[in-house]
Length: 291
Image (cartoon, rainbow, N blue to C red; front, side, top):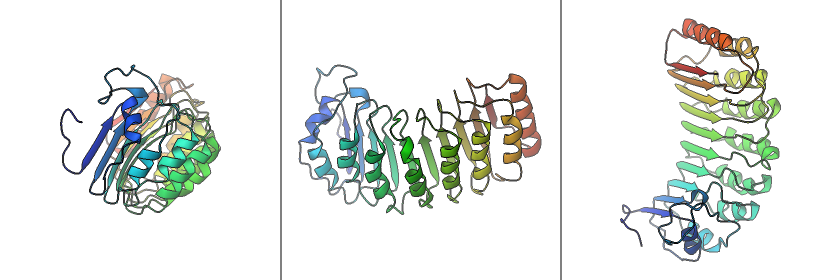
């Protein structure tokens, strides 16, 4: 039972063992419009007060949850936070293949598990048929087995032409310039996109790969917010020149820009040059570039 009853049409589940308990419950979810599961490293159990903080889910029996999710006929908002739970391909295949088709808002946080390309495939196939998604937050960080799935992921992303807000975490996947260029090309097709946040920390991206992102983003006329974190990659001072070339001539409606290049090989002198260049060309000051 809930300590506080959620609003009608909303299901919220929190917990480590609590989620395990839920997996065997057959709930009637046919009228639910918002569905949320939060189990970040086993925290916040409302079902079992003796849960040890940080206890992971591991490879649990997901039959009950998968069956319940198949009933979500009217759901339009889905949030699942399952970070740091040692979940692998079997879990992903069972759960993500049951995702509702009529989703408009998806928040899916799966970083630091044991996911591989095969585990992501059911979600991508489901997502490719979701032509009403306008907001997508997808955290796949530090699942290095997903590196080889970037091509299929990009192809799926390219088809989501209704998206207006995108928050994507691809940190720690070992991505280089080639993979980043593939993702960037897909982003350029999202012509209705207004807000984009990319977390690309701890990859193998050079200055040319970083500049390629802006080269493709400037093709999106509706963009007003860009937030990108390049922390701990392989970007050098020459990034400033290539970035300037990529940035010029586009992003007419851009109002907010945040770029972090911490723990790269860029001098503060070059960063100041970059800030000055952007302010001169764009004639606005809502900008943050951090080195």
